[in-house]
Length: 168
Image (cartoon, rainbow, N blue to C red; front, side, top):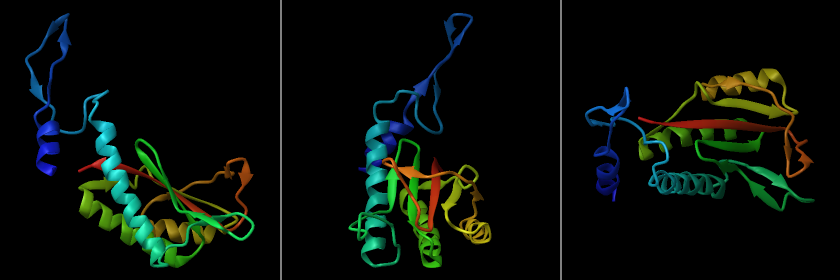
């Protein structure tokens, strides 16, 4: 399957209009063309791989997601979007270290690279000193937000990592 995807992506060519006339075709060396119909399907493959890794991490009690409900009946750890992922977990050093290991593993498996220059670690009810140390471990910057999920304020000590992926 990887060869099929590489063929679809690697053989794409494009041209540009110069004074109303198309230039010669040139190969697209990196990324997808805007509006490429293949992109959403490839994203789903990658997103599912990340989902499997996160589920395994939570199943092994190596990452504790954020619990919702009277007795934290429902736990969630991540939400995925077109070009980024939101990771939400309780304030624990084990979560930070597990996340770092998972992101490095994900990079090796998927061939994508986490763009830590765009990634932001933020928190709710967490001291700035802890947040800065955690951001240092994850090699990203810190941010601040008032966090509300589905209309409910997040009040337990929680960290939120917004990560962005780039193709290597």
